[in-house]
Length: 86
Image (cartoon, rainbow, N blue to C red; front, side):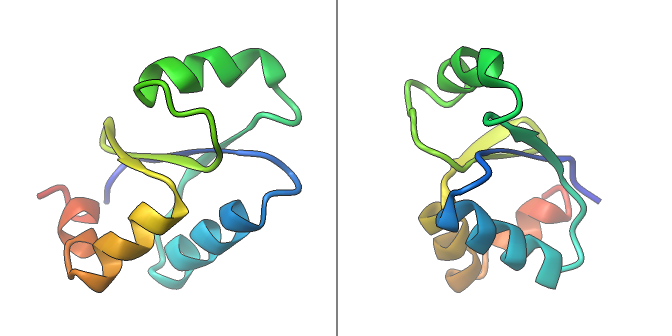
């Protein structure tokens, strides 16, 4: 299974929506909560090519974007391939 990392905050509804999609697919992920670890925000921005909003999601080291991007991959039938490592 793929390594999934999600930068999030505690009160972000888009983070909740992205997490629900991953959980529905049975995918485990590491969550970096910027509410608890604000010192990691600059790390997220650098890895995400300057994007400052949450969530920012990475699959196997590849930045896939935020919640809308994740759901777009799902609707296009591309998410399962990424999660399978392909």
